[in-house]
Length: 148
Figure 1 (spheres, helix red, strand yellow):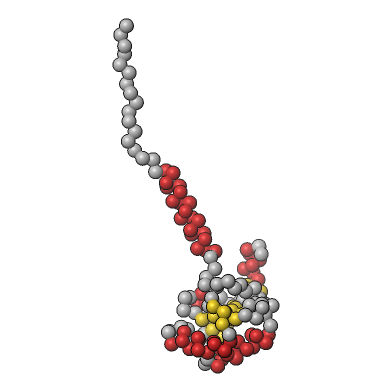
Figure 2: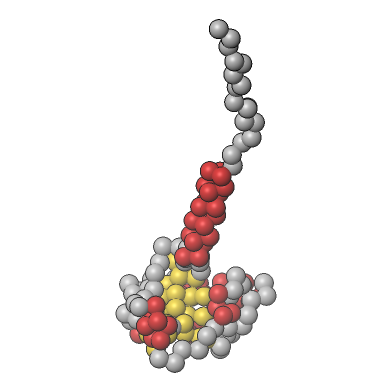
């Protein structure tokens, strides 16, 4: 009986990187999505902005050197991510202005905030020498388009 010489299967010497590529693309997508919805320097406070029909876009309010003050519903006032007393605003604002910030204050006021707190904050901002104050609001048309 004559045996036929059987050929062995050729050796595979490559590494399949398809799985690695899928994992990396998924990671990049998740990272990108989380950066898009991550809150910008708002700490633990949240403000329910008033809704208006004819809002004016203020892209400078989202710059890193913009001076943004927030007044929460419970009356707490925030300068950036830090809770501060309104008496501290003049010094903080002057420091930011000497560092080169725009001479404009952007206010995020919760629609349930008390008028007395807002008036006090406005007085303290004016005492710092800033007269250009903008209230940030939410556009009704934009929220309707998003289905909110």
